[in-house]
Image 1: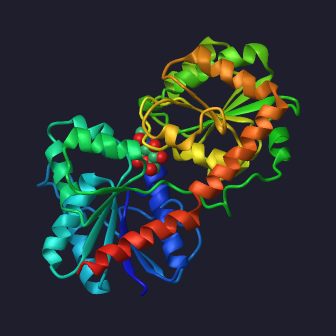
Image 2: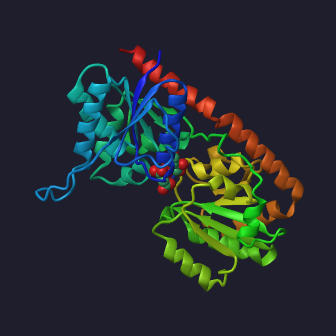
Length: 376
Ligand code: GMT
């Protein structure tokens, strides 16, 4: 039975938007009908699919409202699309506000519409501590027909913090290995003036304070004392200028490449020897998985879902938050041993393609959809 699925996410460049969009594309490839109900065209949609529709949520800025009513407009749009298109499922990414909007839409529509909520992280690990929102997040989770989270750690945190009773199923994030694989991009090194013998370290994030990008710079500073290397920074965000200043202070201007938001992430990963993701909070760390699929070993911090992605000592290393010395030692270990690097690169690819492949994860979502539809 083919399903009609509405998907709501933040359509920007963040990991949750990427996962929601990629999932929509995979579902469409399997013959399901997918309706994106979002405030903008999802960033990763790319090519045209005859069974993917886009319904824009455009919020009116009436002067009578002090704040634009995104949540209510979204709920109204969800209800409208659910009735017109006879949706079976509304799959929302983020409990706040999307699960609440879906609940409102379901109340408006009645009937058999089912809500699936996927928790991605900051709706729990940051907003969950905010007493002005936590009860609402709990409500959104309890009222969903099915709830998933992108790591087991995120489930534990949700249950501990919010005392939820609704079952939460872990469904890990995935990569599309038709997009993320190691390519021959050596010309990129030349274009960016990276010498052939220089090692390339990469960091990809939205430069929020939680990503601790200054730790990446400080670790790189230590590494570059012993190894000829360049650091590629992909992404942009609030800490960008703090990071620029630190790079200048440490005299690293010639060694750090600020490349901003880029679409061809796999090309940059293909010339990289190591990824650093040294976050304070990270419910999964999609960037790590993208690196692993491109045969890049990774060093991440011992937080959130990162230890579920990296196998310490096999696909990379796990270090404590803020342990610059530990990170730089491990990085030097990987970058100076051909055998260790090769072993970790191979094991990273193997892990990405077995535990986190699109086929495995897509079928988990499909099974979940069918299981709640059977409960009708
Ligand atoms: O990491 C961010 O700041 C962006 C955020 C998002 O909404 O995209 O990422 C969260 O969801 C991703 C996809 O599930 C996860 O890979 C990230 O680990 C998670 N970020 C945090 O937990 C901080």
